[in-house]
Length: 158
Image 1 (cartoon, rainbow, N blue to C red):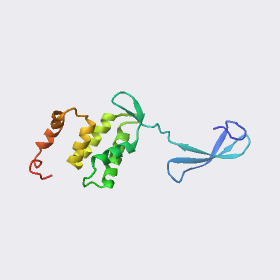
Image 2 (tube, one colour):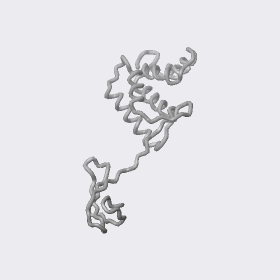
Image 3 (spheres, rainbow, N blue to C red):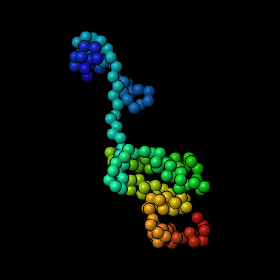
Image 4 (cartoon, rainbow, N blue to C red):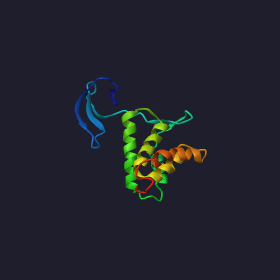
């Protein structure tokens, strides 16, 4: 580390401790040339996550896009905002565990679909209709067919 005063590259660390937020290390250093002291901070280098879209373009990952999609899908459904935010947290956690630089929009969409299918089938169908860009009713019915064959669906038990 170069001394900010004399620009020499010869110092020693006097003290190291975690910062109050726990995301950085504060180090007190002393220049061995001019004997002045200064403070440095060490942080983990974070590479921003990018989303690879269907057309191959890339955009920054935005948690709010997942949140707004879920809110639209769950509109007028008995789903609390806290539940929606928990789902977004879960999805974001899973993405960060699997990917470090780029994630496909398909992977994100599939995670959202999985969570909505468990949470609320109407919200699931709403999201699926936009996500899969159905061209006609036949495509829409193909998405519904597996759900309709599940026990309890036809009798309205869900």
